Image (tube, rainbow over all chains, first blue to last red; front, side, top):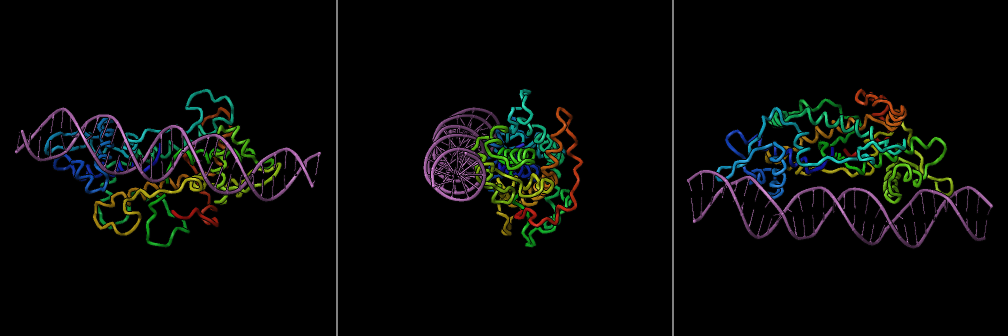
Length: 162
Length: 162
DNA sequence: GAATACCCGAACGATTTAGTCAACTAAAAG
DNA sequence: CTTTTAGTTGACTAAATCGTTCGGGTATTC
């Protein structure tokens, strides 16, 4: 599971579709306008999202994209995996030829890490995110199951850029 | 928190130092040989690891790298942050100028995701990984039920710049 | 048939990745 | 002291990825 801005753009766009898709398809132009993502980049992302069954397209005037599944069932992991092909960090390529003990130390390590991260991203759905987004200025409710350590920046600036 | 192969190489190399550092410094040539990572790439990575206080270098014959801190206190997050500069996925750049409601939807979203992932990576230490690595051919000892080390939070340098 | 909006692909600059090469310095061994 | 070992630094490179721009398509509606 790779974690880059690409997947984050995709999730942002899917959130936009979720929030604005109540009354008909959402155009990429509107998403581009609202989320400040280039139209052509959105086209590329939604091409993958469509081919992975995340969204459905409606062509012609009044067209756009709809969620192909209910927002309750679309997870962040789904979206990220749709646009971001997974990488293999193990030197053995996942094969069974890692004879040398040291050669594949990473194997189990990243399997464990990826499993944990993936399981978290799979537990968050688009509707979770949208629901969390509604209370403007409110606190983070659900996703804040972890305490920030002492020694965090005392400034009011939230920790966004990990 | 970006998750790429670069950070994984760094963690692998640090695991190697942890496992082979009992009897003196570990040379990059040895790590390169064992882990199949190019020597020059290791040089770059260990340059950053050294500047971030992860390892200490010993020059001359018999030299190499030692852990600068105890393996119990070095977390995966420390290593990844040392070699992989954090990225900012929020369009507003973390500033407070996101007036438009839609503009910064990603803000709280990724703050929550990053916080969770980071908190997990910070809960796993090098010694955890090495301990998990010892039972050859054994099953993956459950990495999920990790403990939060009580003495980790008030560490002198708590991996700042969230 | 014109306007809308999805669809497709080529190309691009910028950045990152992973690796190579060369020159240098500190320290140990002879 | 000289040689050898091994870390240190910097420049450089090929490849990939990122995000964007451009130019053309095709399906649908008015």
